[in-house]
Length: 231
Image (cartoon, rainbow, N blue to C red):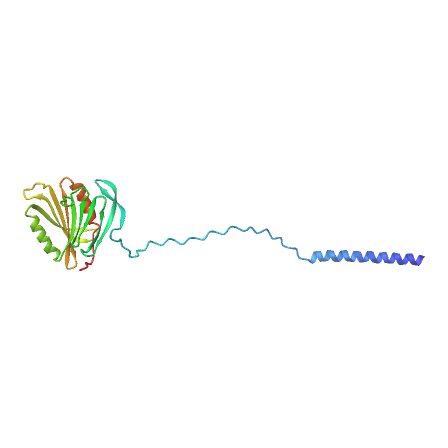
């Protein structure tokens, strides 16, 4: 009996010793095991919007207005802005292109000339109109001829001038009679070099409408561009 008790006591002691050794081993492992890093949660920010490429300046693609094409513009008339509705004219036979106010003028297209007559005039015998024709002679010769003809009735003024698109030309102004009076009908003739010849753009208008039509004709002529003529 004593022997059995002794065996039980030794077994219990051995078990206790094993438990103590196991506890030490776990503690040692805890000490030698590296501490785990605590990584904070990653917050995903919304992606920055992609930068749009800078707009490129508009390129001139060489396009041009077609004959009869209509569009709007603004001019200063009698000190105020006025919206003008234009129609583009492109006449390669006469050799020019130009914009005219189709609400104020009626276009009379002929083979050898273009005429723009006031909406308020008799188209068969107008007073207020602009006519553009081609002359095969050089500008100086034609200016001499036009000046000689007008000077029979008018006290003319001949001067060099520049049109915005057509460039240098000769202007003959017939706005006074030989005796110095103001005539009922006025003329302003532009002779514009064009190749071996010239364009003659003659503006006719009455004294009463000189302010309005004079400015409109001048504005139209500033849009005139010389083209290579189709023979």
